[in-house]
Amino acid sequence: MPHLSPLLNVMIGAAKDAARILRRDFYEVEALQVRKKGAADFVSKADLAAEEAIRRALQKARPKYGMLLEETGEIEGTDKSNRWIVDPLDGTTNFLHSMPQFAISIGLERDREPYAGVVYAPILDELYYAERGFGAFMNDTRLRVTGREDLSEALVGCGLPFKGKPGREQALIEVERVLKETSGVRRFGSAAYDLCMTAAGRLDAFWERGLNPWDVTAGIVIAREAGGQVSTIEDDKGKPHLDKSILATNHLMHDKIRRVLLGGKG
Image (spheres, rainbow, N blue to C red):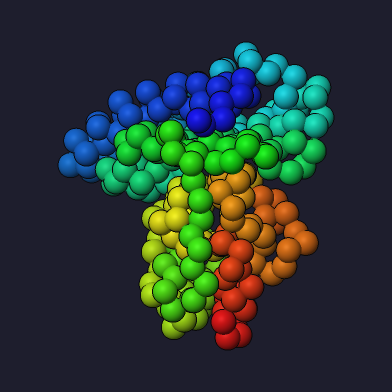
């Protein structure tokens, strides 16, 4: 049976509060696309409304915890060990174009380490959740990363910087390196969702640079609890939810993918 502690129930409840808002607004976006203006502003309002719903739910349940929210920023808590890290809409561009691969991401950082995570893709109705030491689940199904070892059979996810964001040239170089060694590269447009795809064994690995804590904290817990290895791209000593780069794989190909990304051979 899935592990659902009081903590996870709080997080899932908050995610579902936000999902009601985003699900309703998602079906309005397509109609707005025919206008010359309005769709982006509409999505921004949906993002803020979802974040407010999550904030209220989490603060009601755990009023002493601190918070780091994508839109609102840092809210100090009296409990210095626990901090919620929240992205109410990861994959905004997908949402804006009526694509269902976006997610609500709620992570709990405990003593500066990812401890619990919920990632909910409301249009796909895929609820991913994990708490350290208790495994990872999607809806009622236990998650496990793949057991592939051969890079030539691997399907790898990535993130690519959008217009005006630094790191485009490096990202394209890394994509070319990975394409030469694997069976393919995919970009879903949501780091939280990519990490869950790795946890579920749909991807063998995922990497991205230039990320923020709210993009990945929840997904890191889910990937690790599914048996995955998560680190920065450079080494295993950093904190991938704080250090701006992430590599998530099964344990069998982690070092191989890293060598390829850094310009070596797998």
